[in-house]
Image (cartoon, rainbow, N blue to C red):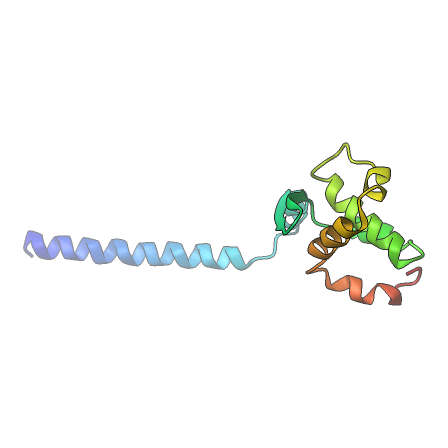
Length: 129
């Protein structure tokens, strides 16, 4: 076997090993990891809101949803959702601060923060919602 053929053989061997490693990585990536999911809920995210700017927030958790489900009105629910999400990025933010937001700005923020929260559509079906 010539050195050229030997080199080609090694390249094919390494390519096959790389494919196997990538397949294992892809399979591991598909596995559900509840600890990683819980960890991801503590990550701060950001979004840009036209007329407001870039805001930072944390995603709602199951514990947050339990607290939200206790609210009596849609208005209270909206204020609580905003506060729960924003205070994760701004720990000094008080509920009174959120209540002092100008209504038009609060509406933009709430709309942006809740754009992908499907469970809110079913909130009235919850026992205390």
